[in-house]
Image (cartoon, rainbow, N blue to C red; front, top):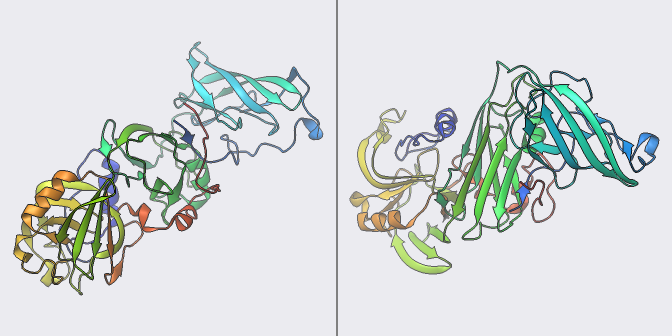
Length: 422
């Protein structure tokens, strides 16, 4: 197992399509669209309270000021169309560019704003014709505004979910940011990250402390057969560090059958479950006391039928080696894997001798490799070390109550409801 270096891990994740570098075993160094509730408006200013001027309702057929304000300039291309009055719920928007092109979009289900289906174009004039409802009836408003020029300074971002792939039931929606999103900006960014589940299964976002990753999961594992559709709508969103979101990303993928692995250090056995039934029990050897395996729930992140573990850069000479490995399944950025270890068969089920990986016999490793999907969960219990937050896709290492505390926006009991229908 190799050393856990977030910078290297982040580069791999942001490449998205690239394979994650294998570094072997050793000690760590280190359909319902869901988004945040409408806190500040998407244009960056809070809508005033009330329904009409001085709290009076806007009359049926009345006119409402629109955000962005008429004549405003330098608007971000992530701008959403809203009423300046929070008592007005948006029901429809016609947004037209100066060349006559119409922009498609959808109101948030709470009516707080209208979200364009794609980022607006830079340096372009738009006219918005807004229809909404107040407590007194239908209202309308118009606004013409101009978007900003393309920014020079943008963040890097990544989405680890690929179109038309099938994942395990513990697959979180994984987003990565470089540099990390400042804490003061996370609510605004989270409002622009949408997850669709079919059938609906409410969930929540959780940010790691340095803002380089955010995970989305439900309270329980995804239901087998679920479709996940994701839009990370970050292009042009302004951040407090002077940078802007770089691109919008989309993906749609399937969740497969329920498949789970549980490893007990006390017995040194892995119990394998498929659709809730035990299908196999495998003897294992975990990390020795000097290089223990991590206890916690991890997720299969990557699979390699044949690879090389190279730890020659390890600061401890005793941990340096180059070894051909078969049937490797990555569990952490730090280099913990399930893999074939024919050299430790005599110890499997009896004692721990690895550098932190889950050692299994070659035949068992091959069988397991043939059954697993990226996103399948493995829970290890009873070792000397707890799984570190962010060392892999650690969304399931926390209880639901702990997980929702990492959201930048309030989360209702059971998870966030529908915020945007696409």
